[in-house]
Image 1 (tube, rainbow, N blue to C red):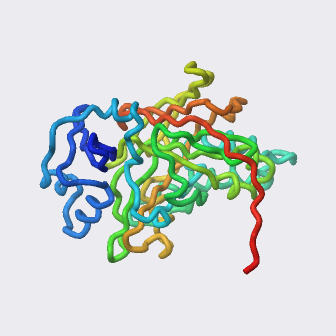
Image 2 (image 1 turned 90 degrees about the horizontal axis):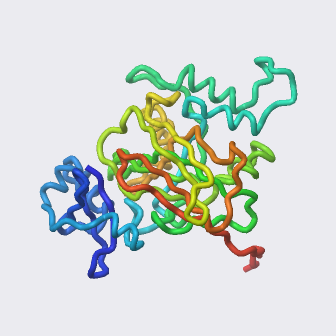
Length: 330
């Protein structure tokens, strides 16, 4: 079962469940967040909670997306309580691009490996621990909160000071924290972990700056376990024509970490176990158009698709106006 949030014909928020390609509104549901909280409070699965409510007549979810009426598949009533974070160097092959960006000029000896390659090797050696054991922690970064989330179909805006506006096709885990601080996984969605790779390449310590950008995920939220093998397509369209296209792989068969290990090392911090919060956690990628020398332009459209996740995620590229921020003394 997949879920979407959208604006219905009456201009109200609604949630639909998609099974077999058919989207049916969930009766009395205005948000996935409220459904998740209800399921947690009742100690029931989200699927059972949805089934209890029943369904309305089918809606055309592809038409809703084309009309700009589909929202992000989860949000929070207070956007500051939705956290967008991610992990890197988690996929087989993901180290090659990053390693080239930060390549050492010293001889290729073990002690002179880049930090990226060292982190990647740590994941290969300890990212998939046995059940009940703790594996090595991954690279981790903060992207923003609900104010930085862009709905499917809407433009992702790059700040004027950015040096690059590049896509990162990923899988995002979606979580809601229960009253007792327990993280509950709602499901997974396609994600575009939009980044500034030119800024990052200047110095690896600029990674934090390069990640503070808009992002998008959805349109559909897939319930249940993550498929072990995910093979999608990432494209950049310019004037409706593809200027770059490449497959991307995800799922644990293509990763150096287990999902459980990545989840543990995120939620081990009490900061991320605050009751009622929502977390959107990007799991990384090995595919970037930047690695192939692509520089995006305003109006380009990112398209990330994978059949197991339903409708494709599309966002145009926008650029913000230049401005100087001045702090006012009180």
